[in-house]
Structure formats: C-alpha cells, structure tokens
Image (cartoon, rainbow, N blue to C red; front, side, top):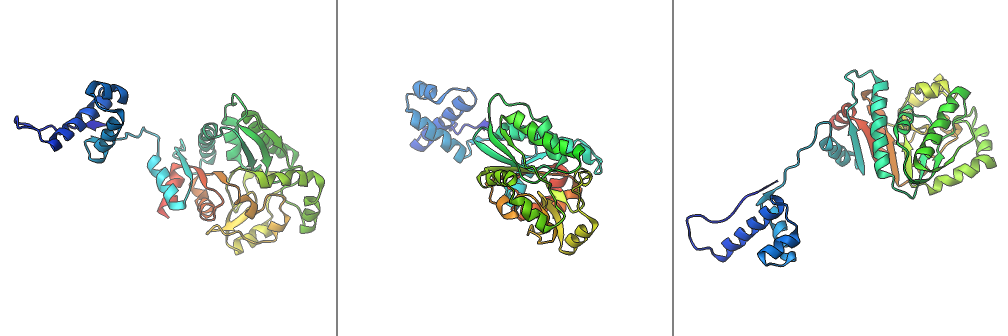
Length: 334
C-alpha cells in the first residue's frame, strides 16, 4: 500500500483544489504509513473525524492510495473466485494436492480432507443441523483431521444415506458420524438401514418403519449438507460394503447418461437427476430434498472425478466446493 503526495512544487501559491489534494495526501500518509488512528489524525490536523474518513475513502477512489495484495504461496484465491463465478458457488476452497501423480488418489483425499477440516473448523460457529453422507473416503479424511471444538458448534449431525452392509465397513460409516459429532459437540442421528436394497418394495417397506422415519423426519430441518461426489464406478469403500452397484445397474446408468452421484442419487453431465431402477431402491435423502438444504458442501477432487464434479455443480447439488488445484483448472477449462 503506497500513498503518493499531490503537493505542488516550485513555491507557487496553493489554490483551494491544491490545498485539498495536499490534505488528502497528508491524511493518507498519516494513516497508512505512520499508522495513526483516524481520531489521532483528526486531533493533530484540527479537522473532524468524519472528514478524515471521507478523505481516506477519496484517497483510494482517486488513486492517491493504491492497495496491493500479495497472495502467499499455496493460496489460490484467483482460482477460487473464478470457480465461484463460473458455477455460481457461494464459496470455493482450493488446496494443493501435495502430489504430482494424477493416479495418487489417496494423496488427493488426504489433502482434501485436511483442507475441508480447516474450512469446517472455521465456518461452523453454532446453530447448524448437518446432514452427512456415509459413503466417502474423503469425508472420513476430513472428519479425522478436524480438531475438537471447545464448545458445541453443531446441534445435530444426521445420516443422509443408509450404511448397513459388510460389518467391517459399517464401522467406517459409524466412525464418520461419531467422529464428526465428537469434534463438533453435535448429537448424532444414525440411519439404521442399508443404503441400497434389492427391490423397490423392500425399500418402500423399510422407509415406513418407525426406526427409519424417526431419522428421515430430521432431513427437512437441515441447514447444511456435507457430502462427497461419486463417479459411476463405485468407490472401494462402497464396493466392499455389500451395497455396491451391480454391473446391470451400472450398465443402465451409463445408458441413461449418468456421470456421478451424491448420496447414491445419480445425475447426468448437466446435473439433471437420472431416473433409474436403482433410484427406487435407495434408502436415503431424495435429490429434491437434498438440493433444498441451504448450504451444501461437497468435498471432491482429482482429475478423474471432474465430469462428476462439474455435473454436480451445474445441477446445484453443491454450492460450496472443496477441491484441488488440478481439478479446479480442468473445471475452468471445460
């Protein structure tokens, strides 16, 4: 930040305009270079504090004061602002993946998890009821990286999609919700049901069960959703859970143009929900109800996931995105 003097030279008599410019420069230097408070400047120059404030504003407007921001290494506000403008996001958070190997998805997940943890610690300040997807290795990384808050910053955390499958993997889904609740002081609300059933009839029956309806009633009151974005091929966690998508379901989804999912709700390249037979067997929040949640935070990255991330953003599945530099650049280039 620099202040340049507009005082005349050569000893000529100052006119009114010259005097105003001189005062403008003097006030700017006192404030920005000497670090004086506005009240101190007003007292020293025998002018009112409101006038000091007006002069400082005019100094910026007229270029007497030029503000230069030096962005630290590793901060990508330019990319973040471009993503926000391109996709209508409330906020984008971009981090370095910490790996040059595009196939190192585990490295990308760790970096995204760390960035998401800091973002959540900073922005969760109390009064939220949060819905969280149970099928995301990236969300697991984020929650495990979160530092415990000193007080309650979330009222409730509610499971958005069923998680019962292979008992070894159900431990991971339970740990996700429990760890988030522990870090934020939230009361956890678990969904005691599979994420994917064999028939629509079985799904309809279970959705009417009291143990499930007690959970689904919370979905209408959510203020924030925390989700991952999946590709058409199921993640290793989902595949090993016993809730993996069959080859026949995948084939149908491909024919319908599906590119990704949020909470097992699939969408096409434009983000439009795909109506498939699988959709009628999911125990989880609907696409409509999910996209009604005011704040929808997606944590996803890696170049392989870009088509799914782009579809999710274009379809309004998320309005906050935590991603990596490589994915952000491809999202902006496409």
